[in-house]
Length: 417
Image (cartoon, rainbow, N blue to C red):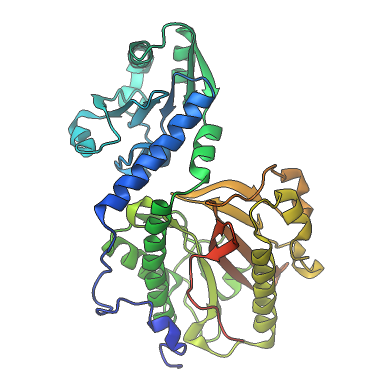
């Protein structure tokens, strides 16, 4: 077996105070307050620009963005018990179930906390029709309280059919709100980047733990647990996927981690998709061999191609460059890797994966209009594998778009070939 840290550079990403200790954020509270204020202003500007009275938020990540209220985020993605109204004048109402009203206490982003109507079927059952009517009455009353005396235009990021129908019966014009939230989240402030850098720091400590434990005899799940452990103990929140695979299970990609046992020389590939401290996402991918054994010729070819794609496409990221031109100038994927190409060349990232998605020339039907702007953060992706043959290599780096070009936010070393 190879030494645990064959590449000593990776050891440096553990906590300098000792790997048995969690990382503790050095970021002052004032930075978080400034980030909150910026984020809320960004969303309010979008609401006002579209002549809406308010936006109704159900997506817990959007509520976190606008108000920094965090309440059982993962549970809330499929149980819509928590929602918020953010008005064009900046007023914000957080609707919580009564036992959780204290969660918004002291947040300068929240002006009112009201009890929520959890009218979805799990709680309402046969009362759903009645409860949704009472919910809609309260929403409309709140809109009229804030000056919505005429036509009521309400944006919403996600709204189930009974709620949408009930609001329309009350004369509310519903506006698709995902565009508003994604456009608001597109440009990060300096304070947001500071928070994101810390999440990446925690993520890379978790990756160092994974590197240390990438040993023959361990399961994919045991190796993957090292990232969860570092994230949670250091103030992070959750991982959005379970994308960690070994050996032949790396190809095709998107097989979630299992109790499959790693063997010396197997390729390990993973995608962190980590929601870390302060709710920010660290979306990084690396690949290396189990026991850090020397790569075979085939593994070296796959890894070398992945690095070529990452390096080429990273150099293209410049403010003002149109997404279509980026696609046209992107690294030409060799024919033998086309069938298994990744779903995008890059995508936005903030509190989670975000707009935009930029695709390969072969996926031109998914083309999105737009251009790179300073303050955007994107993840540049590569997945290299032959269709039905051998293993896969997955690489990804997180990048800030600046006036001067692309600045990598992560630095965890690539493998030396």
